[in-house]
Length: 211
Image 1 (tube, one colour):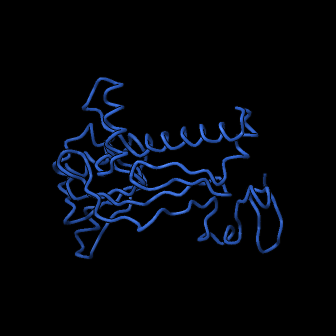
Image 2: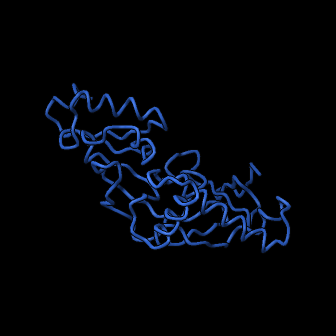
Image 3: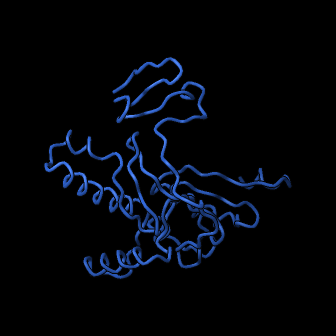
């Protein structure tokens, strides 16, 4: 990265490194004195938990894309973090995107069980599409016909304290897609468990090849 960036061209890195593997990557980034001003890194899987084990001072300005950041100023977010810190008796622990996803998922499951009147898995799944719960960033998570949910997309900039400043966000929640429209083999494929009862429906051939 340093050699490539030294050629004088504008350079940025899109990082898909996952989980704990981010720790040695960001440590070496700091060791090589690669700053966000020189070569900004935008990551899809580095968050508050990974940064909690690092000296984040050399990493200030690098970016991450998530659906949630602990620093979001929303009443629901502040209330959840406070409740969680009381429960675990440690107000230093960080909250992150996968944890918000667990909160959303559990609340949706509760709603589905109440609607279905049972915990039977098939009946609960059948009631999920159309259900909504508040997310922790001030919006709404809705289960779609493809069993994906709606979420906002946020880009955060690393602070010296290991938190993120939100520097960009979508105007509204983005509907999740089960298949990528950017891959030629999946361009016409959708999942629709309400109308087609199919997880891999080809809208061009009108064929279902996966349940």
